[in-house]
Amino acid sequence: MTVTATSVDRQDQQEPSTAPTRGARLLRLVPAATAALSGVLLYVSFPPRTLWWLALPAFALFGWVLRGRGWKAGLGLGYLFGLGFLLPLLVWTGVEVGPGPWIALVVIEAIFVALVGAGVAAVSKLPAWPVWAAAVWIAGEAARARVPFRGFPWGKIAFGQADGVLLPLAALGGTPVLGFAVVLCGFGLCEAVRLGLRWRRTREVRRSAAALALISMAVPVLSAVAARSLVSDKAETGTATVAVIQGNVPRLGLDFNSQRRAVLDFHARETERLAAEVKAGKKAQPDFVLWPENSSDIDPFANPDAAAVIEQAAEAIDAPISVGGVVERDGKLYNEQILWDPEKGATQTYDKRQVQPFGEFLPMRSLIGAINDEWTSMVRQDFSRGSEPGVFDFGDAKVGLATCYEAAFDWAVRDTVTHGAQIISVPSNNATFDRSEMTYQQLAMSRVRAVEHSRTVTVPVTSGVSAIIMPDGEITQKTGMFVADSLVQKVPLRSSETPATKLGILPEIALLLVAAGGLGWAIGAGVRGRRAGGV
Image (cartoon, rainbow, N blue to C red; front, side, top):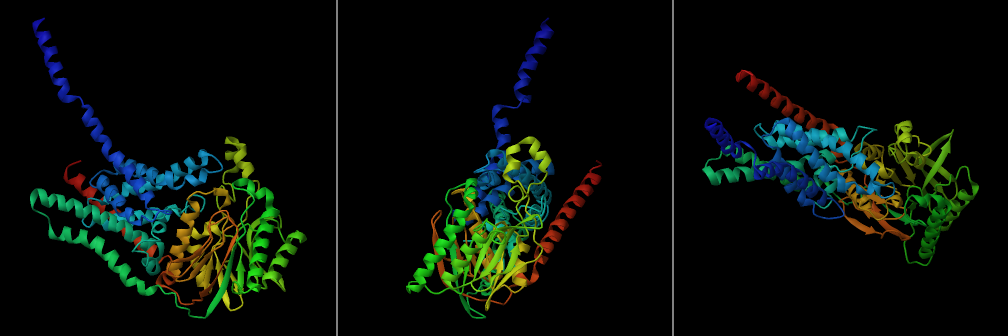
């Protein structure tokens, strides 16, 4: 009995040393909490806020929690980072349809960030790891921009940098190079801080490692300074006076479509009001007028009364109008831009090519209908995709069209410029999303596109914010939200192409190869390490 009691006493004495304490358990949660909070920090760096620089500490913290970890830990921490970033960033997707679609979208999109986390953890053990890790992030963005359902590039790091010092890099290599530079600076900051702390403890830091950390931050900034020469507001082929019309909608939310004729009338009325101001000498005579997406959801080719309203507006302003219409042709629906001349009527059309999943077409319709019939009723008929780039000829000016959602896709904007566009227009309809941040996120995309291709970008929106953006990304005029208004401005016509326009997808491919090289190196090093250890 004495022996037994002694054994029990010994076991009781040993338990505190083997069981994890509450403090230890809480300590294990620190990386997870840091990953999620760094994702939130990245979200805060995005518009409508101008805190672009917060992206650097966000990635520094993300790199800190990932460095030296296994790929499984990286996968989990990456997913938490993705949730912290995308949940607040994309909350607008549930404004009118409820939290279900919003959460489902975020859950799926965060998987890509989780895979990036696993990749960053793998390459974090390599020399010059910030370079490999930044390339892995861009690889994740490239995948997210293409799958599923033809991709969803919303939340690209470049789109949060419209006010940032690195913005000129968009003209050098497009959104992949700009995004890579931002992430590289963030991971470089992480490495610099890590090495600084090590030096304080041991007074020993390899010079090469310290130099690479500093170069990771310095090279992007110096490159951006050099790239400023690629950005110019100078007119190369003359100027054009453009008018942007925001007619407003009769009501907010999804119900605005139920008064389609009212939306058309509002835009015609605002155009006629502008015509009166032009006649009175208060505003300049525009060479052409740009209406937003869905400004005429009544098909003017099938409804003479809608055509008459547009015709009257064009005659009043004495200029051709680009009208956003919903057109049915051969039993198919198209989100179409129509060039309406006051004398000739409809002369050119452009059908939107990148239609929005769950907004303009419904993937897996039968499955979604089985889950919730209301969701299928919101998209009763899928829109068909166009196949040709949209470049309208307004006299001496050629205007490229990237309709709303298309502004998020590199190729959809670039090929308007390679097909001769001297100005880019992004006609949009944001009335569905109320007063959410969506409008400002999209406006920032257009600012990045202006610099990327060195073109004036106009943004006519049904309910706002409409804007005119110069080739350097500066907004020179903008409207409020849910008001009727018009903007008139003389803008430069430009025909030269930036390196980003000329190179197209090549910078992204180069960064994908860098990512693949880093991952291959990391995997090979891991295999060799296990063999050497006899595992």
